[in-house]
Image (cartoon, rainbow, N blue to C red; front, side, top):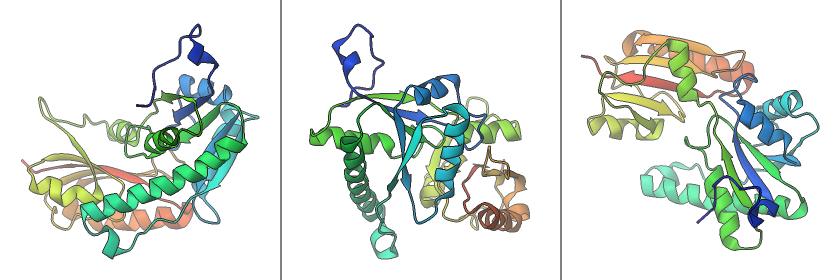
Length: 265
């Protein structure tokens, strides 16, 4: 079991090396908490996965560090390739197995960096570490192998869910109701199970053709200079949403979107 409780300065654990998993918000340099800034500044360096030859999200992390924690170097770690073939990922079991293999490969790559570089380290996480992020699972794998020993601290961040609600001036659930948070991959399954108020993250596309009468509140690249908002009945805005996604990807080399879907009536 990973120890993620805050350290008592008088405890022997206070002398252990620290890995700080730091939520840095959904993209804007102002969407980072005072606690997160302190955690970055107290670290010897930061680590981030680098996907491909050029990763614009790594550049954004460097800009954030330059603004809030100058002097803290961001060490990029080449991210292992992940099997994205339809034959491996079409089922939930297959997809889960692919992701677990990828976690193992990533944890080994990160472990090599941590072994070579002493000092406390920060891992800046997009949004909040609790929402569809693999960092804590990867850190647990490193500790489980027993070759490195460190204390893990988690600093929460402003999530895309919160920014979406704020931008659209929404309460994510209706009075006395519930909200389901899922991924684009699981949306159809969740709707078939009866969910009528759904926040959707991690979208490879917009699988909304069967939900044309639902209402949607959508946000793309929230917090970034190019953020985009759309709301309305799905059938009325779907073509615009898809066009906005492609425009954001073309203009910024990346797109992250999140949306709330609500069943009519």
